[in-house]
Image (tube, rainbow, N blue to C red; front, side, top):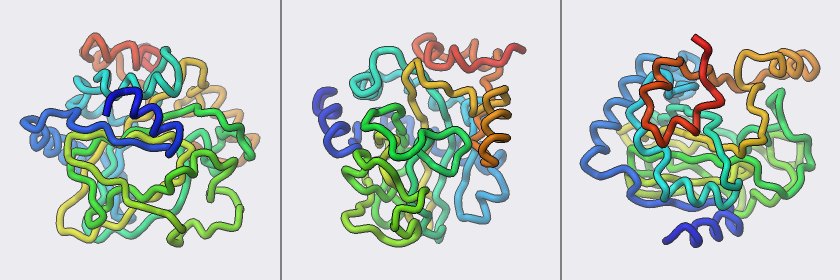
Length: 266
C-alpha cells in the first residue's frame, strides 16, 4: 500500500500496518539489542505482569533511531496529524511467554486514568498516533496486540465506566498481526489491549508515539503542568524522561527534529 492507502485505513478503521520498514538483515541484531536493554532497565512491576517495559527508551538504546523518520511511516502519520509532528513517547514493550491478557484502554491523552487526559466525551479529532515497531512477528499465538477496529471513532473507552468489562473479550476484537520489521500504526483513540503470548518466545517491540506540534506533552516529564494536574486530579501520568543532550546530538539528522522539543538542558 502507498501512503494514501494507509491514511485511508487510519481514518476509516483506525489502524494499518506499514510493511518491511526495518531491513530483514538488521532485524535479529535489533531484536537482541532491544531485549538486552529491556532486561537491564525494565521495571520489576512490569515483569510481574509478564511484560518487559522501559519508558523513555531512546535514552537507553538508540538502535531503532535510524528508522524513526522513515517516510513510509512519517507520511501516513503526517496525513493524520499534519506536517509538523514530534515524538512524544519511546517505550520498549515485550510480551513475555505466558503473560496474561491485559485490559482494554486507549493511549494518552485519551486514557481517562491519566492525570493529563482529554475529557470524555472527546471530539472526533485525531491528536496522537501510536506505532509499534515489530522486532518479532506479531501473531495470534505470540500476543499480537488486541484491537477493536473502528473504536477510534467512539467518544470514550473502557478506561471510563461505559459498561464494558475492560478484562473481557469484546465483539469484533482481532489480533493485529504483521511480519518482523513492519510497523503497526494506530490512532491512539483505538481500544487495544495486551494479548497473551502462548508461545515459548518473547514478542519484542518498541512503541513510538507521534504527536502534532500543538499537543502539550509537558505533563509527561518533570514539569509544572505535571505537578498541577497531579494535584488537581489525584491521578498519576506516564513518565517519559527528557532525552540527554549528548544522546540527542548523536541522533540521525532527519530524526533530531522529532526530538528537538524534548532535550535535557545538560
